[in-house]
Image (cartoon, rainbow, N blue to C red; front, side, top):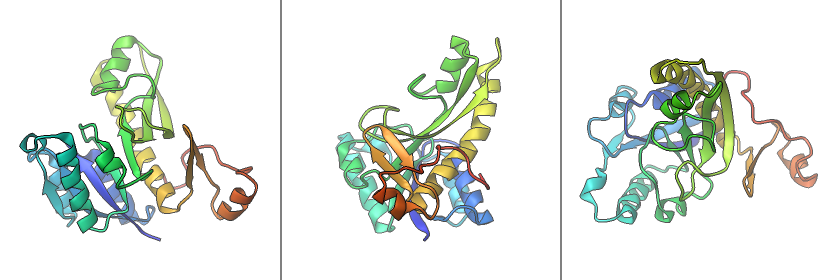
Length: 226
């Protein structure tokens, strides 16, 4: 079944492009119904337009509260029949107004191995700290910044003395793999969240797993095609 998704962007939209490309290749069972940005100059809007995807700009500065802004985003997403939302470089904390409209159907990509280095510059913070392993995380979104349950993570080596840009380039390559993977798991209805633990069921084993309390869960790792 094809999952109708909405994508939220604030910048270049390279992770949006990775989703568009996977859909075009036939490895991702999703359809991007609309792309929303809070910045009119975001290049992600151009990427969407080139792919024939509807776009909307809702500038958060035009609203008196986060809740009012989120309510308008929800309205746009619902008008386009969206069932799940992907935050792909969307630089805003969202409120319960938004989360309650799409319960356990809002995911975000963050360029660090959470819970380490949350915030706006995870790659730079990791490089400055001098970690030897860095990476990226797809997680469910909650009311706190970069806080919700982890869906999938990927690690990359970090070298002593390298720049933020050098590390960010390697991390970004993995972002482009794990975000479409997480969307595909949503499309296949294979994800169950228990507390902070995200369980990913094996293909074709959902009913059996439910009956046996998830005895054959797969590790959240990249599958063929991602």
